[in-house]
Amino acid sequence: MTANGFWIGIEAMPVSVLRAAAEHERPIFCGRLSLNQGLQAELGELYERAEWHDVALDTAIGQGYLMDLLRQRFPVASVVLALDVSTGEGMRDGVVAPVNEASAHARRITEGLLIVTRAVEAMMPPGNGALTVMLRGPRRASSSLAEGLAAFVEHFVSAEAARWSEGGRLLRIARADSAE
Image 1: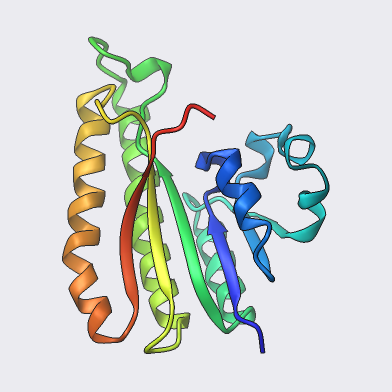
Image 2 (image 1 turned 90 degrees about the vertical axis):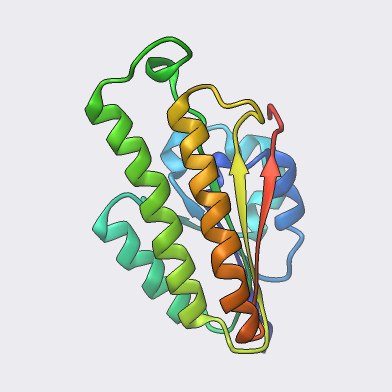
């Protein structure tokens, strides 16, 4: 049986990553599809090769849907989770974001990271598989919130990587600085 590959948080992935992912034998793309209406046109015929799921990781329904999808598509060999830590227009340099916007952004990043790492670990066979957490955003943080979120994600992945390796799984971090 061919193992599946998941790309989660596709709205935060560069198109070049999605093109490469579509070459996987069994690609499964998850994310907020409604945020990127032009994705089908950009990917062209590769769009048809992948299995697509509209998943909102910042909702309980989206989290449950993703966990169930991982279970249904067993075995899972590789997962890429993209997290965009950059802050929006309302949270740029010198502007203090409203508390509700800042806390919602922080919650999306932290809950997405926690839910996906735990779900993938539970569904990935011991001794096999990798989860790559792809941080999207500029190297120089656009705000103190973005800088803090990036540091949290990097530290969390670093701290968890040793435990994952004990089970024969790989947990790593990558940066996607592309302006795509």
